[in-house]
Image (cartoon, rainbow over all chains, first blue to last red; front, side):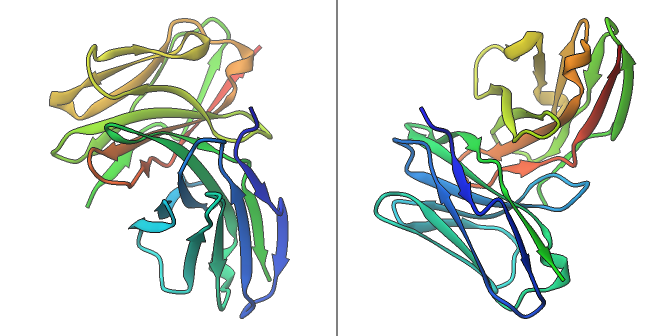
Length: 115
Length: 113
């Protein structure tokens, strides 16, 4: 089975621009989460989507938004980019068990550099 | 605020040495616990997880972790490390009933051949 896939792998943008990152979950997974990983730190939770609805949000400004499509793939949008948005953006998918979302499986990430 | 602490940021060991990486979290309720590993040039992979039951859980590649509820800890152990264990290790906590996964800052392990 294919794992979580993300595109693009690398991206360079300038301050003030907007960016869209894409994620395809593992087949059968309906939950997708987005994380930001700054160099030297652990992943920071941005959003979780399930069945196209936002189910959780971390401490990120409104410049960050996301959506999930009927095929459970997801996009993360970041507007008005700042230098501090430079990071590795990770997508993770999970199966929804009776306990709720279970183990998250991560994609390779999109490395965003803002100049 | 909920947080996860990994006390060792960098660890250097010789092959065959024993490993213990600390992980403590701050949350009073029930949690799901995870250890993830990131090998050089690869993405995050699940090493092991704890949801309930036996607090000693075994993962892949000979790793194990013990959940001590009274200490809010979930330390990772391996009796004898190998050069191929060189990687960054992340502890993560999911407060049960929420959708947040809170990660620690990671521990970089270097194993000398």
